[in-house]
Length: 387
Image 1 (cartoon, rainbow, N blue to C red):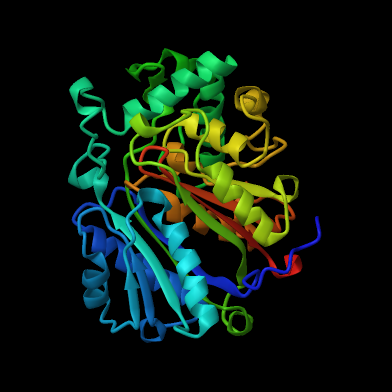
Image 2: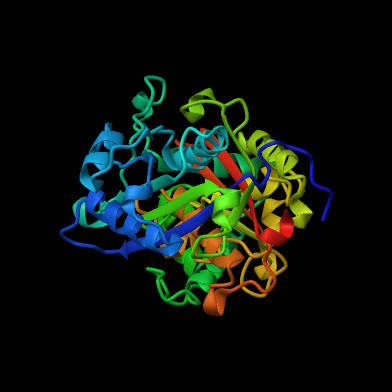
């Protein structure tokens, strides 16, 4: 491991509680109902109660004022609420703000929570982002067509193939088959993916994330307090975010995302590099995401993502464990998946992964995507041994 930098925030805060709830189908529950269940479980994991929470970070798909609604629902009177809405990357940005507030003494216990009933409420993938006036005349499938454009460009520039994208889906399913909480656990092959119905060329059904219900929550506090709570703390070593545009019509390069920037700053803060990371959790709303983020976060060179994932390299038993819960492609994807990357990182760093546990995992990278490859946010998380 490379020597850590002297960032004043490195390891000063920690996730002390993490939980999911209702992944898959949870009929009869609203997003806030699901989020409240996840919050209760995360607080119990930390050995804390709702009365300990004095900062609330929340984003639900159906409520633009969810910071107010969630506080009311949970019976809280927090010192601070935030519901930054950059899509799936919002929750990693919440960690940045929560860490700064904790270190400054502006709060003592921060709760970050999300819930969605997208599957049982609508049955289809719902995007909160509307196409821009420049996209609308072409009637894109939002958000799918934006990712299809990125995939097509990557294939054109670098020679990646639909079979390479299929490798991503197959690896995710292999991890999901080791996870009893994953929604999709049937066998999946590259051939299955290639034969599946095209939805937006070159992306087929198996290149697209699940549509599920589900909720997740994490609890953060200062490191000195974290060591005396119920569960093993997972320390925030590096955290950064970057937003380059809203729609892909404003992108200067469809094959490079703002993860290049967020990743570099998160690594610098943590004092580590890609080669030091033991387990990687990426926001895989579509298979092309995994290729782009592996490249932009430095696990392989630009354009090398297709070759990098071949032969089960990111699957169980491969060189780099990626999306060990099954990811958005096979575990769950309730509208916004970002917070689930944090929870799975905690599972792995605490050694609680069961059949999918990565032996000796001490450093995890959790990365989230918001909008249509628009906003990126990266966390480097570690065990006490990494401090």
